[in-house]
Image (cartoon, rainbow, N blue to C red; front, side):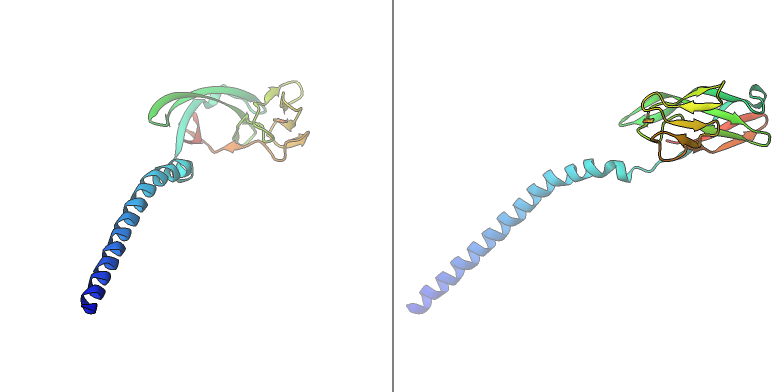
Length: 164
Ligand code: FES
């Protein structure tokens, strides 16, 4: 008689353990289905692979040695689930031997710098940062030179490389 009671108790305990295990697995599945997408959304910008793409800007003959020219162009980029036409501005500076491409985003807080042709310098309208005509920081708060984009000249055309 005592033996039967003990057998029933052990069956009851293992049934409880089994139910606890099933409920635990269901809870883990529910938590995973909520937290998983949130983690994926939050880390998506870190996992997106950016590509370099060459963009034709203009004829080489349109810029003379010593000249700095503002150039506007557009390219198709992926924005979320859409592909849109995005407009950009860069400055090209032609030296004796080469052409450099300067991004106008100030290295302090990202305002767009403007080129002052008489002073041969870029000036940031936000906090007065000053860069020389090659984008090297000269005074004010910007901590480093303006970013440059790779340039190539092929068949008389100037191309720049952008990360998209
Ligand atoms: S954003 Fe250009 S100097 Fe501050």
